[in-house]
Length: 363
Image (cartoon, rainbow, N blue to C red):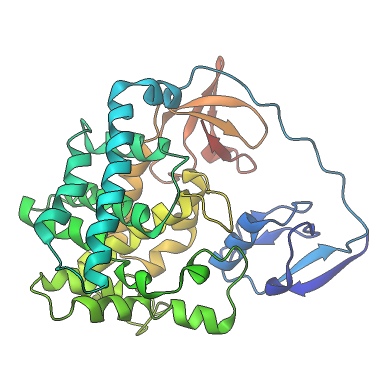
């Protein structure tokens, strides 16, 4: 079959990869024959892949049909059918609406930044969860909620609260961290909506404007009487420990711990949520992305704690494997958290020993 090399930015939906794509560590990212879609382009961007090989458009490899959908009673379905989840979902919708009202009045200068009211929103939702792990059960199953800046910010606040507990913070520090997560993207409310919701790749000018939202957010709150750690999280949540972030390309200790936590919560929620330009990534794919590249970009102490705990959140969940089989996660592999042990009927599959098999879907 004929193939050619193109720059990644030239990739279009419907093209097919003609040569396996590997990351800088030599691990397989995308297999030959994979059809390019928004999800694939997101992964290429995440790993900074500059060039790929594709088949000429008139030549298509044989593509195996997708495995049939299997209707089974799953852990996720049991969560969704519970009264606790129904209460959480109703409260989530109400709190997103209230948060939108509270924050837009401040941004539009028709009201003040009332931290007492803002604190109520995530804590009302947290009161409807039995444990920190239960929070992820709830968030994972609100799959049909529009991923607006407001709902995303509320998700990040909840995840930050959970991380704060996992890191044994004092209650007053957890409250500040929760507010930092809630307000981290306030600057996006200054970005035109058509850019925020654009389904196609942003132009260079649009991307440069988008990269200003941490500064815009900081400018909104810099004179407010709020904890400086919240202000820093707003300004620095897109910085990376290796200096590859923005707006100031800060490194390591120049980024506050709260900002580092908000960063991880922000990325995890963004990548596991559906966006206008791509489908949600499977949480275990996101864990793999963090494992492959994350220890240079993010604080290792925080990331290890998060990944170990988040993996626990998906034990008992029913998953589909890349070979089409369906099973239940029964055990994590500490040295390969994206590759847990899965029970498939009467067989136990240790994915850490099956390098060509991955989890593609959580039911």
